[in-house]
Length: 201
Image 1 (cartoon, rainbow, N blue to C red):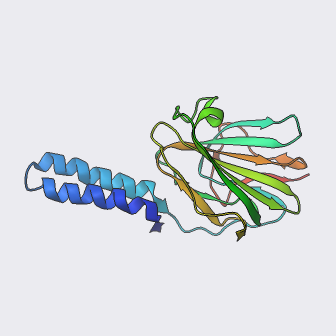
Image 2: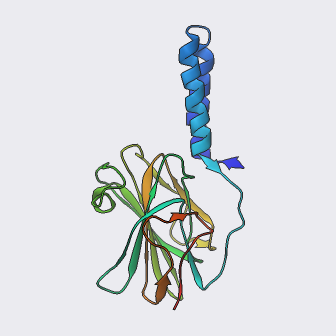
Image 3: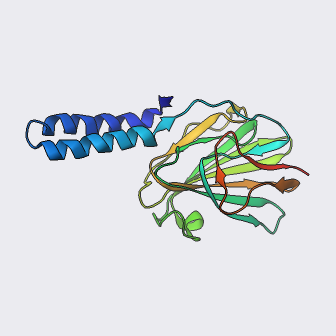
């Protein structure tokens, strides 16, 4: 298991504070050590073998499915809530080319609220291939104040490739084109790169 680079400032920062406080007030140093350990868990990047298949749409994140909806144009949207205990890096649900990465400023509502996926600060990562357009939405929350995209327009990516991370609890949505049978429902636990969101009808 490795650690995403965005986690090191938090892990090392709390560790240094813990060492410094150990000479002043030991109980406080224990709290900083615990925070460092929690950050280590939060920013973990466990090794996995991606469940690659062009007939599948894979989950872009770890978490719990909040909602599955069908839009007026026939596309489907799956919303996933990530708690602080979940792995917080995102993976591409399909192979394709990154067409755009758009940052939208907004609020920092609790990630599980129905309006959060519309009103909160977010990144929209648009991926295109021969089957259509897919949008991965990295959505900030109360604790998650920073969404980081690791890809840029023009990048050619494979299904399951790492595309970004959100710092602390948050939400990720996936918008996919029509023509797929949804395989998850609200309440399901999902894992990025492994859980099958949908299959070709």
